Length: 265
Image 1: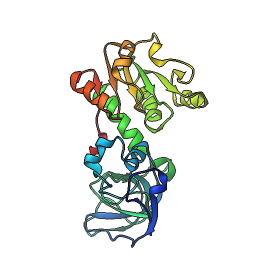
Image 2 (image 1 turned 120 degrees about the vertical axis):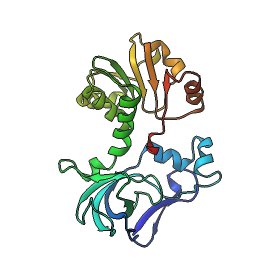
Image 3 (image 1 turned 45 degrees about the vertical axis):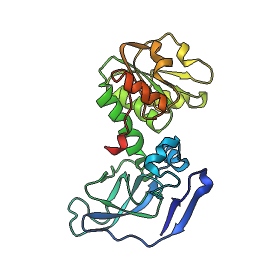
Image 4 (image 1 turned 90 degrees about the horizontal axis):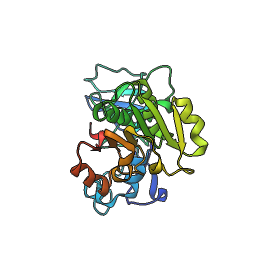
């Protein structure tokens, strides 16, 4: 089978497509024939080895894990002897966070890892990125922000994977939602349910007078100190993108600034 790997940090040119044997599932594993897999912002940051302090975990001089891709959707091709939840031919989707990556023709994953039957009403292409954008944003909005009906949420990067999920989730939770994106994506974000959309190419976000209960920076372009005047008294600033600046702000103001590497959940 063909699989994408990288053995050194860098631009997309470092990606290699190699041939390896199709893996055989262990007793507690499922072999999935991949129909679609994701390429996320986090994937590209890891491939580049940025921010550089992340290399303390990824590999100081070169990546420890050379596999690429996490999100996937496909069809069960084989099962181990202990599998009870899935059968051959089932359409499944999920996320593989360790070991072999999803940018491949096949992968093996434990029944107890992040894998579930794919809903019939969505395609493999639609299912593959769900665990990245949707689950990350769900964790922040539900567990950290504890969104209540009537609150006002600002989503920066509202047209991306995390941001588009956050817009829909926040609306489902009863919040008023303002999205921030480029002019070409305004209609798209409005179609997702946003009450209002700001074009970051035409405004200074931090110069706006509106106050928000939650600012969710899905793309890591803002920070608490620049945004605090846009927060209500009990408002919080959240981001899934870690930086030194955010780390210090989170340590100094744990009730105001929220970050979490949700993938480890």
